[in-house]
Image (tube, rainbow, N blue to C red; front, side, top):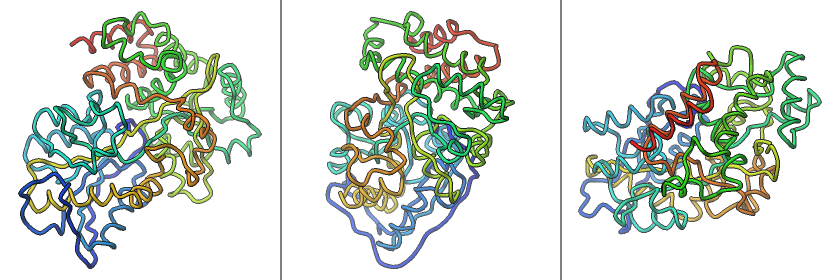
Length: 424
């Protein structure tokens, strides 16, 4: 997805350096750390592939303020999880790394913490963890991942191109399908997906599940964990994947969608040939920063019936390599302390393009105004796979959704594969 499956990216390494010096904090979590806290390495996913990546901007601002050098390592989303696991196992991972909460993704933090690869964090990091979700950020009473902001994951709407096409955002699913047919006749598509990269169809499926599963049953994941239901017998999950089939059959996706990569999303949304994409809100923010004049906002996927609902959770977390050089480790912990300061945390949210962990305020990113009411009322659920026990469940969903696009899978077999992966 990000991981969650967004856009194409090109690996790069940059070193940002200016003057001054960074300071530590007794809550940093690295007792006995030694060496000067004046530099560290930081790896993260680069969705847009450009200099407007929010992590690059944040690193530069931190260097300007403290003089601490940050060697940034932006990596492609589709290979990020595997790269980090390989480096951690090989003992050559960077000091600071971006991961996902929970256990359900290839870059999830809990399995890495259980394997002893990550450094426990201090009180400042723990204070940012949403109440009731501590198990997604740590184990045995220790926190190993610091959340950055709340990220809506829904439908990115090209408001500018839609206005030119005279199309309003559909209020319900039937209207969405009708818009798909009309736009296809005009040589546009209602949606653009990277069908050849399973995480993007997987992300689409999860975004759809917000109204089909979690709006009526917010605790569905808990019920599955308790053995009270399964994916295969869930009417909500059946409807979710049938919706994917319906979208495909109605011509909602761009031509060649099953074989498209992340570049199709970048081109379709920025050029206005497609009006929607399934993206984390921060990816849409990056695209606007990189494309002057682009008008995007975030919408909930239209419900088949009932009220709108969406996904929103702290999808990006930062962790420290337990095996890093002590000087680098302390520098990374100092950086997390700096990020946890309320003033800096607000700036992080502004740069990253997310929503404050505590909810939307006066300075809410304009791209989220269409879903402000949902965010304020709590009409959202976290990404479903954050609560799944292993990455295999999401892999089964992602590859299964990809198969629905090509006709090589059917709804029931995908759900049964998810159950099999869940129970392993």
